[in-house]
Amino acid sequence: MEIRYLDGIKEVLYDQKWAESAGNPELYYMHRGIKEKKGLRYDITIVSPQMLGKEFTKTLGHEHSDNFGEIYTVLSGEAVYLIQKVKKNKVEDVYIVKAKKGESAIIPSGYGHITINASEKILKESNWLAKNCKNIYDVFLKNHGACYYYTDKGWIKNKNYKSVPKLRFKKPLKSIPKNLDFLYGKNN
Image 1: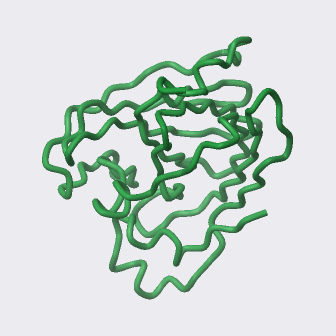
Image 2 (image 1 turned 60 degrees about the vertical axis):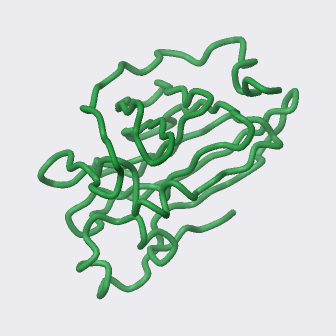
């Protein structure tokens, strides 16, 4: 198990002033490689329900190596997935999927994402992805977060990106697809 502490995500927070004196609490727990199947890895992440200053608890955010996809399923609680496609610091596409227990969200090939826990309950989610997929954090670290921050005042654009389109919302999947071949990426 890996633990992500506040110090590990300070660079991507909206409320930097709050982060200066917030200490270093535990934010989420990653259990990677719980099982494997046909070159895919199954993980579980548990995200605490707390505010990070004005912003809801979130993950650091990452993109995937080699155009791999990923699928998340909420096991308990509720998740807000911000899914973005960035080219040369311009956001080409960004959307939100709000999911509750049993619902899933696909992270398409070429997209990065964060998970947000905007509820007052612990969020427990699982994911499937290619075993040899690597997480790439560069876009999120360079731009101090995703292209939008989810705060107690709603969605706020991150001005560190050159261009950010209007936020749109998609419905979650009611069940996980039987065929997960899309997780292997476009170039694989």
